[in-house]
Amino acid sequence: MTIDQNTKLYGIVGYPLGHSLSPTMHNRAFAAAGLNAVYLAFETKDMDGCLKGVRALGICGMSVTIPYKTAAISHLDEVDELAQAIGAVNTIVNDDGRLVGYNTDALGALKALEEKTRLSGKTCLLVGAGGAARAIGYILKERAVELKVANRSPQRGEELAEFLDCPYIALDDLEVANADILIQTTSVGMSPHENNCLIPENILREAMVVMDIIYNPIETKLLKMAKDRGCRTINGLGMFIHQGAEQFRLWTKLDPPREVMTRAVMQALMKRT
Ligand SMILES: NC(=O)c1ccc[n+]([C@@H]2O[C@H](COP(=O)([O-])OP(=O)(O)OC[C@H]3O[C@@H](n4cnc5c(N)ncnc54)[C@H](OP(=O)(O)O)[C@@H]3O)[C@@H](O)[C@H]2O)c1
Image (cartoon, rainbow, N blue to C red; front, side, top):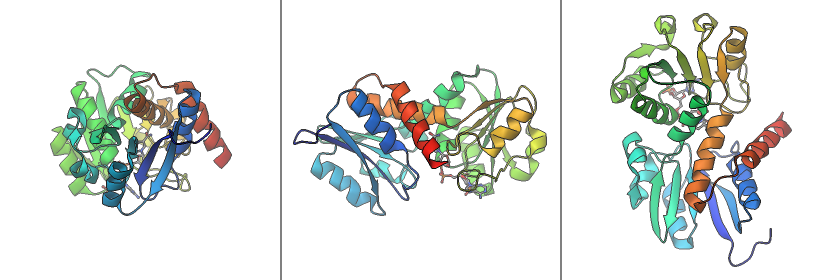
């Protein structure tokens, strides 16, 4: 593509951003859709300044990631109902100067799960109590899934359990957490620490659905163990592509080119290994 005076600018704000595959995924999607648009990584400790820049420069849309998903809310003119309820935004649309916040993590995770399993009436153990766990827990509760939360820090775990109106379980007591679905939402097991895993092997039962939202590596140690124990597994790539596809739809009002986006991310991950 040729960058010219009409090129629309999008980006991601977070710190650190070295690992992010969002620029690769979105630039390939813009190109595939024939859009005169470019997506850059803005790694910054100055989120306030960055969002002032979005307004001043007319940047058309932003992804928001760790550690700004909650803090960004107070800088926006409007926040959609789902993001407001979750208390975190991962997407900003610049609508003619009005910055509007959305959360596509929740929908991304939901779509990835629904591709593999029916949710209604199931029990789910959420491991982790950070922003991703909050988004996933909220949308699963809306789908009548019975939740349990486990987390390293009891305070954060208990807070999320209270928000979701469900039991909190200490990480040491996971044996008692009988669940149909287990979703690993912490950063434990992410590259370069792919030999780490928080979940004891003996709690993984055949026919259990095990999802790890980490997508680098695509198959985490947890997912390898779960496969060996006869569980159905879901890696983090599906959630990542679905949340990115929803961002593309919000920014461009076009159908997202999911296959192109998936291929771009897979190729980038393969280059890293
Ligand atoms: N696939 C996707 O589309 C997608 C989307 C969003 C996020 N993610 C991934 O999900 C992970 C979490 O993101 P987040 O936004 O929820 O982050 P976050 O808000 O910072 O929460 C991090 C969570 O990980 C736990 N944790 C971190 N280090 C730990 C350790 N050494 N032992 C035990 N627990 C530990 C934290 O426990 P404490 O409360 O005890 O600190 C907390 O529950 C990241 O790896 C991120 O890349 C993937």
